[in-house]
Length: 160
Image 1 (cartoon, one colour):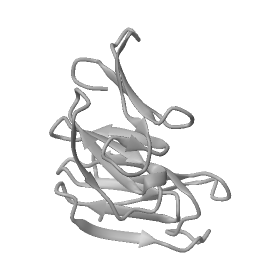
Image 2: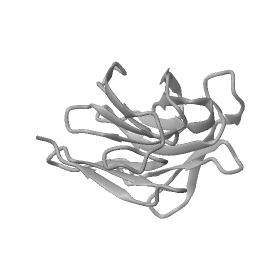
Image 3: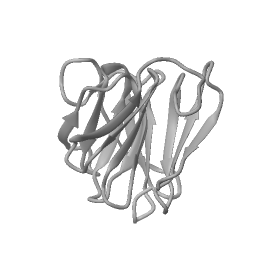
Image 4: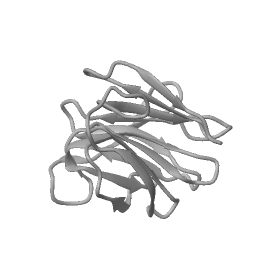
């Protein structure tokens, strides 16, 4: 939801697009195409968030990338090197927290430079992951990761 109350929705399970609605639910516009090669091609767009600069970040899950647009749906840039990104959240300093369905979490700076990454192998051990699907960051910088499939749990990581 942006500052004007407009709502952005990813529509990945069938349409490969994302949409903008007014606060009362009226459709403003729809963007994206099914595909794998070009910017604004999507293969299961998933999590969507607005960064501190007002840009949309759309997790293009099956293309293993995150595409950024302005709020009018104009492509800006993309980040790659993910393993099925499912969700993205932004911290108070602009850092991006990305859950990846293939057992890992990545944290990047506001420019997309990788700061840290953990996981990579499926594990039920605390601090490891089976299938991260959702991610959130609170005002103290603690990270919450929700898992699906065989993971079926929520883990909290406290910033020290």
